[in-house]
Image 1 (cartoon, one colour):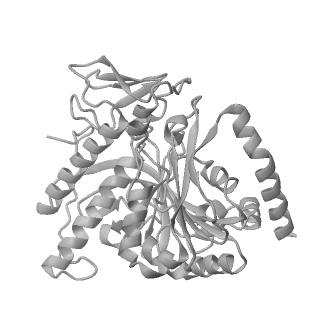
Image 2 (spheres, one colour; image 1 turned 90 degrees about the horizontal axis):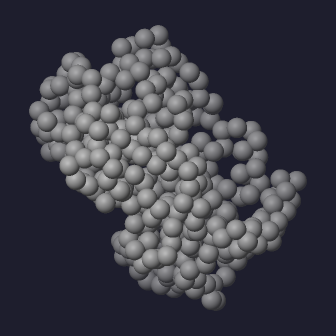
Length: 433
C-alpha cells in the first residue's frame, strides 16, 4: 500500500508541478543536458530551498530516492510519507551503514539516488563545503553521476527568511560522468569535479541577470541570525531586523535588503559589505581568529555565554525529550552548563559531531543539534538575538583546531591534556577586541 501511494504521489507531482512552475514562474530550466541519461543514476545537487527535491524530482526521468536527514522522519505522518516516496534517512552526525544499504536497494530497483552533499541549505547564498565522501560513494554505487545546480533559490527564499520573495529559481542539470568514467576515475578526481560543478554564488549569478528582481515584504526579517556581527563597531548578536532593514542596536549601522539581494547603506560611516556573502566571509574570518586565539591561550575568558537554552536529548530512534532549561557557556574545549536537573555539565568539543543549525526561524525555533558520546542533543536558544549560526561556525572551527592540537601534542583521546576556564564573558562582548 505504501509503495502504491508513493507511486501515485510521484505521478501526480510529475504531471502537475511542472505546469504550476511554468504558470507562476517559480522555476525555470536553465542548461539541462540529460540526453541519453537513463535511470538509475547518482545525482548530487547544491541545496537552496525546501522545494529542491520537488524541483529536481519532477525534472528527471524515473523515480529518485533523496537522502534526507533523519529528523524529517521523527513524526509518524512524515515517516510514512517520506518512506512512501522512497526517501532515505541519514544521520547528520555519522556514517550509517543502513543508509548505504538503502541507497544500494534503490539502485537495484531501478531508482536513482539524490544527495545534497552540503548537508543543509545555503545560509548566505553560496555553496558551502561539501561532504568529503561523495567521490567514494559514487564509486560504490557504480552508476552514472549527474549534477544539478540551482541558482536564484536562495534569493527567492533564504532559509532564515520568514517570507519568500517574488522571483524565479533556475535549475541546471548535466551528466558529469558516465558509468565507465566513474569506474576509471579516482575518488579524489570525482570529488574535485563535483565540488567545482556544484559551486554557486547567487550574488555572482544575479550579476549576469540585469533585469531580475526579487521583491517582497519584510525581506530582512530573520537576517540577524546569519548577519550576527556588526562591521562598524564589532559587536555580536546586536542586529535588529524589521521590514527590509537590519540595524545594529549598539552603533546604529543600518543596511537595507535590496531587490537584487544587495545591501544598501542607510546609516553608518560606509557600506562595509556589498551583500550577505561578503558579510559572511568576513564573519568566518573573525570566527577563525577568535578560535585560533582561544586555542593558543587555553584557560582564558569564555568565548560565548552564558546563554539560556532548553536542552533536549534523544537516544537512537526515540523522540527528543526535554531534560531542562540551563545556562550554557562556550570555552575553547567544551560547552559547559550549570548542571541544573539532569542536564550534563560538560559537552567536550572533541566528543561533539555534526554541530549544526536545526531550526533558524521564530522566537522558539532557534535550535542547534549535535551528537555527543553517541547521544543526540539539541539546544533551543531563548534569546531571539543569539545566533545559532554563529555557534555552528565557532564550534565547527574549534573542533578542527582542537582535533589538530590533540594530534600534534600527543594528548589523550578524551582531551585530558586540555585546561578549562570557568569565567563568564561580559554581555555583548565584541567579536574583535
